[in-house]
Amino acid sequence: MKLLTHNMLTSHVKGVTKGYPLLIKATEVKVNQLDFNPQFVSRMIPKLEWGALVQAAEDLGYRQDLPGELIADYEQNEEFLKKVHRVLLEVEVMEGCLKCPESGREFPITKGIPNMLLNEDDA
Amino acid sequence: MKLKELESCLQQVDTFEEPKILLEQYPTSPHIAACMLYTIHNTFGDIDGKLVADLGCGCGVLSLGAAMLDAGLCVGFDIDSDALDIFRRNAEEFEIPSLDLIQCDLCCLNAEVYANRFDTVIMNPPFGTKHNQGMDMKFLRAALTMAETAVYSLHKTSTREHIQKKAKDWGVKMEVIAELRYDLPASYKFHKKKSVNL
Ligand SMILES: C[S@@+](CC[C@H](N)C(=O)[O-])C[C@H]1O[C@@H](n2cnc3c(N)ncnc32)[C@H](O)[C@@H]1O
Image 1 (spheres, helix red, strand yellow):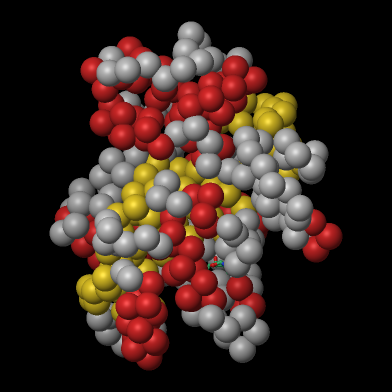
Image 2 (image 1 turned 120 degrees about the vertical axis):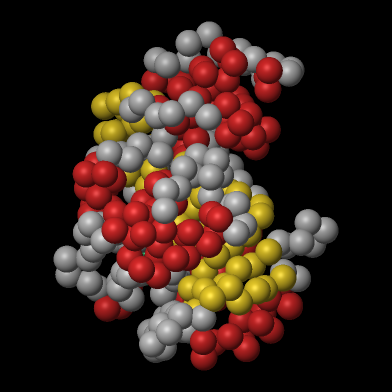
């Protein structure tokens, strides 16, 4: 699971009103090199929950020096975009789980794939 | 990448080992997948550098193809861990890092949380059988919510009128892009109108 994907994931446990952002508990993290596409990264940034991304990167130990608040004019800032590229697309959680911030329900991540399926009780 | 090249790459993609009939696990043929993706890429420019979702990705032939055509990232969604496992192995064998996977049930997915997060959605959805009628329409509904620009989907010709009617109700523009021979599903494009609130 890449952090761009994590940035979109929400828990849908019954009764939960704010199942976002999911807390990452990782036991294995990998960095997979991927071609840097500055336009793509720039286009993704306005759609992100910036705070959730920075928190996730921090939890995994890959925050670098990314600011808590999104900076202005990032489109021109290649160094910044490269850092964002790294946390969005290269850092991957291979094993661990995602924890719903409200219900505490945990969703396992196995071989890089988060399992968001709910059993009947919490669906 | 040329169409022929894409098709021959996709021929090497492993597919379902023990297809689950209830989940309608049949793969898109390499030929159809390649033609579909090539058109989306070449004619509409909706793959290169885009965030793509593949709903009911199965073993990943559509996602892998999209990644080969330089999607920024393609995220596959499927309910079945066996299929996802094959997908993951395919991605490893091709050494394609611009893919990610989520195991989830698209029937009970609240697509609103993904509203417009993706540029493009590609899919070959389950058609829906006696047990799960209307699956294709559920997938389509979710896809239209998730995609900002367009949804490309394979459907049976026999359901065209129904889809046309739904598309109208939902305020989206539908186009038949290709009719595939041998009674195989036809390929459709759904274009979201910016002004429409979905
Ligand atoms: C027709 S197959 C297409 C497979 C693949 N996209 C391809 O083109 O080769 C439909 C896929 O949808 C998945 N599926 C069926 N019901 C689902 C559900 N409720 N939620 C998510 N995926 C589902 C199946 O596991 C299967 O992989």
